[in-house]
Image (cartoon, rainbow, N blue to C red; front, side):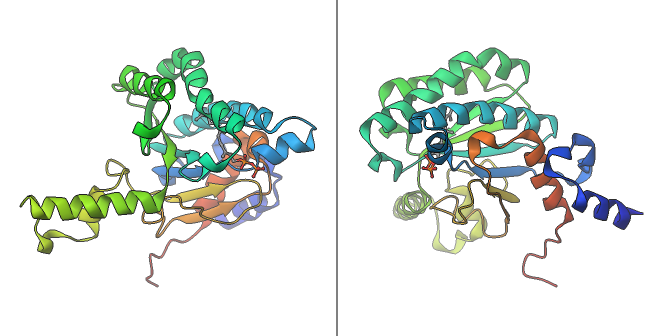
Length: 256
Ligand code: FPP
């Protein structure tokens, strides 16, 4: 019976997936997304690249709502990498304005949905207005108990690991940490994701199949899911399809 249902769902079109196709007992606790393809989406429509980023914000809203409805605990979104500073100045400026625009405009809904906003990355290097907006959003939503919307801004995984290594060495020198106490759990506790479980699922849109310096340590056993669809066109139903596909996989963690 279950097998039959699975086959039926395999034949289903992406647009037909629904919340009722998801097994509530096997929902990933943490989903990470590389939101890619904004520029190409805009280009295809003859629009400036930044129009793609603006459209991408709408997708964030839809996917956060769906993740919250599914009782996913953490949704980590790669919004700006440590490498993205190399983009044209006007694009960087635009990307730095979007979080504050989004957080101010959507604050009522975030509160209504009980969503907690977190920002992860080397945030002190963000422009003052961006930092102020994200810190305010963190403060306003800190007691919300629904989805944690974890926005990676000026985040780079190698940088995170370098920082964690230096911090551990410093703690050893200060007598706060002993070499014998360093195990995988301890290393995880020095990372920016220390409050969260590792993501069970990584989604990347736009057809690229790379990790791009995102959560290198944390993704060790994550299921990877890719789609050709550009981020602005990524829909709730496609997100449900990703979760559904995740639920059909057997996770072995290196065992049999
Ligand atoms: C990748 O597409 C996307 C980004 C580098 C930025 C993603 C940011 C947002 C969707 C908005 C962030 C806003 C908030 C509120 C957190 P790309 O530009 O690399 O696309 P391309 O590969 O087609 O050029």
